[in-house]
Image (cartoon, rainbow, N blue to C red; front, side):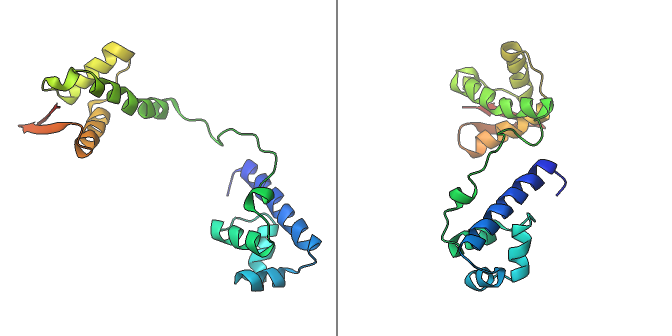
Length: 158
């Protein structure tokens, strides 16, 4: 794991687990026996190493601690990495196409290029026809649109 923020969070969680284990006067070997994990795995968790969620839950159960109590730590709630502008636009594309679907736009036969033009007119964006086509095909699978082939063109209609 490369992210410093995650490493610090895991270290804090591990330290909390170790504190609860010590308060209960238990050894890593005791927790290992109660979880069917190895003592090395328990020590690694306490040292802030990555682990499976199931291992974390098993340790919580062995300590008779609710996971939320162990995870009750101060966290700055923000993504590790900012969403790129292209990804932001792609994630907004489906809801925008859904709005167009809710209108009478698809009462006539439309191509992906028609949808790109409509998105440009309404939202001042210009996604690729490939991006729009992927979403339109998904809407066909969801039963919200019908598709018909005319040569190489996909024609969409409600």
